[in-house]
Image (cartoon, rainbow, N blue to C red; front, side):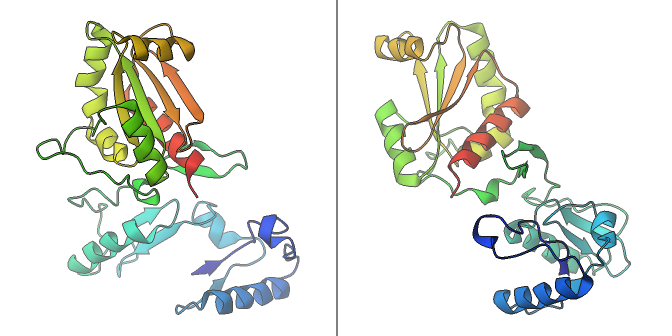
Length: 261
């Protein structure tokens, strides 16, 4: 574990922590951190010029898994034990050497993460599904490769509130060519389906008057359209028109981040 600069000195619950100006001050804070975390692994302290941190990408909480041959086997932009463990197991099974190529795991749980934007404080928002809890509803048998759409808007709201998860509502029309295309492409993409397990999802046809009234109230003019709500029913995000996989994933992650504890 490499101890570098204090990322939140003087902020929130760290108001009494000052950014070290000397190496001695950094060592003192590092020791306090080691004792507080009860860390069972060695703590290495970077120099004041943060040379090691810079060499490894200047990220605040990254992790590198390095093989016995000195090659990087796996890296994370944001350390997450859930996704790091399978990579460690894979490296051990491979004999410990990093090798020339990164791991290709069956569950794809340790693929290099990407970020999809920044929070208001400037923190990078990362694409790591395991960071967010799943809703308390499993897909029906035979529907594992599809989004588990709830039956009614009321049911979706209830699931969202009980699970503390955002709700994703899609408006469509049965004869809308763009709706049909999005349902056959974007909405069945494996990455979208995987992430949808973290949200309460509902589709409403604007051919239904009640759905059409809500559609108009939200200011939409065409389908398909999406709106995301907080567990309490507060509107978070909206999108009008057909949307590609990457753009939808970005919206889903932003909604998840907005309600994350």
